[in-house]
Image (cartoon, rainbow over all chains, first blue to last red; front, side, top):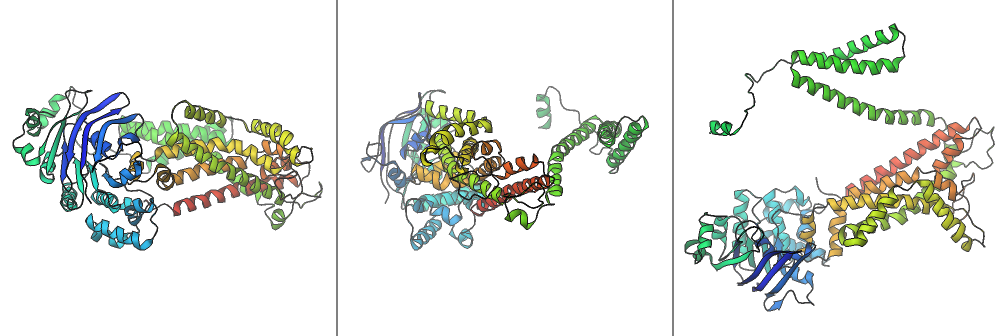
Amino acid sequence: MAKRVSASNVTAYYGGFKAIENINLTVEPKTVTALIGPSGCGKSTFLRSINRMHEVLPGARVEGSLTIDDQDIYDRDVDVTAVRRTIGMVFQRPNPFPTMSIFENVVAGLKLNGVRKKSILEDAAEKALRSANLWDEVKDRLGKPGAGLSGGQQQRLCIARTIAVEPQVVLMDEPCSALDPISTLAIEDLMFQLKDKFTIIIVTHNMQQAARVSDRTAFFSIEKTGDPGRLIEYDNTQKIFSNPSVKKTEDYITGRFG
Amino acid sequence: MTTTVTSHRTRPPAQPASLRARRLPWYAAPAIAVAALALSAALVYGIDIGGPVLVVVLGAVLYLVGLFAAANAVEGRRSARNRTWSALIHSAFVLAVLPLVSVVWTLVSKGTERLDGNFFQTSMNNIGARDANGGAYHAIVGTLEQVGIATLITVPLGILCAIYIVEYGRGKFAFTIRFFVDVMTGIPSIVSGLFVLAFWVLVVSPWFNDGRPSFSGFAAALALSVLMLPTIVRSTEEMLRLVPPPLREGAYALGVPKWKTILRVVLPTALPGIVTGVMLAIARAAGETAPVLLVAGGGAAINTNPFENNQSSLSLFVYQQAGDASKYAPARAWTAALTLVALVLILTIAAKLLARRNRLSR
């Protein structure tokens, strides 16, 4: 299921502005990798370029190569929708579809990609909701609107929606930044379980969270505002947080800058 | 902690000694209103300068002044301002609603006189000036067909155009289209009627009609389409822009293609607003008289075929009856006007209910 993601010389632009430059990084299957760094250092840009969401914005483009199990996702003949089905994404703010019920939200990815059979959809919904630790809370109100859930439940609904299409890699862009500590804990627990099946890459501003959930951590930074973001250090999480090899990483994680 | 915070401010706000303040009693405002009206009536009728309208207007002004003075004396300046502004805002609301209530009242009181079965079952065919009967069946048929055809033409075209502008359009071409849609919004209805007269009735319709130009309900529908299209495009465009981008991204991230995202996520989310825009356009089109007169010609007989010969419409019927010499004509005009308003109202309510049925949120 899970696949290896590797980036070589990835550079991303917003129009004329270079947001990240020459990112080289390999993420092993079935691990959690955290991307940390100060605001504006390009971690989200890098994350979005992994499933080709970066190019959704007008004028945005990516150079370099990004492969998942040796398939370059930026090849000319690659189908973007297939890439996004393989590499799912959870956003910072929960974004359930407001016109759909909880059930419809979970199976939206399957349904909109042509799966019609009710029994398949029902099984997939239950499986995804169970994986997202949401089944017990919503099983009696699957027909109710997804927007009626609490913020933490909505975010788990979005995670369920993402894993319902059975991707191989799950990207999370600050999934807990809009949530309270209890919902955050629920989602962190969830990440531990999902690790068995998926490769997870998470952007977070919360360094404790990075230390808690991730196996490896990548530290991004910029020289000054307007400069492109660069990968400063990428290592085992334990090493990054106890004995980083670059001075700048140490400064950041000890709170001396950023 | 508190001291450090206040020391940052250059001028700390004055702290009231107590949280309680003197208030006007609840009956003060109505009492001032009654006193203002009485004073105003005494003034107006005393020196005999006007009637009840002036009494109310002067009374309102006196009420505002009196309320401000009383509140200023008892509650202080800030509270007096608050009361005066609230009173002003409420009067603005009353001023805005007054004409509407007046229109509805006039319509209902005058329109019910001929609100009978005969009105909805007969046309004006063979109805003479001394004939009390006669109805608007032919006009209702005309309005429904013309507006119906115009809606069938403009709704798909307008929504697709708005989708292009919002979701696909980039650069000069999209900008040009937006610009011309804006220009079209301001086209007077008579111009759209003239356009269809010159283009459809005089040039195209002879091809289908043995070389003779012909009025038709369809030509009226075309003229109404020209008027409806920009309204629908603009309102749909605004509604599509209100759909939050994260919803689109959420669908993209599930591997849903763009067209399907628009069809299944963006449009349903914007649907209630789009329906409102379409209903506004329909209401406007149903009330148009000039283009129908120009290209459908009107007529007294029932003609259910929109593609051939003259057709009337409710607004045209109102226009013709209101100008008719018969003493029975004004009653028919009022009832037709009431019918038109009721028709638009029923359509709007039905469309809103339909749009809401599909919406789950809140």
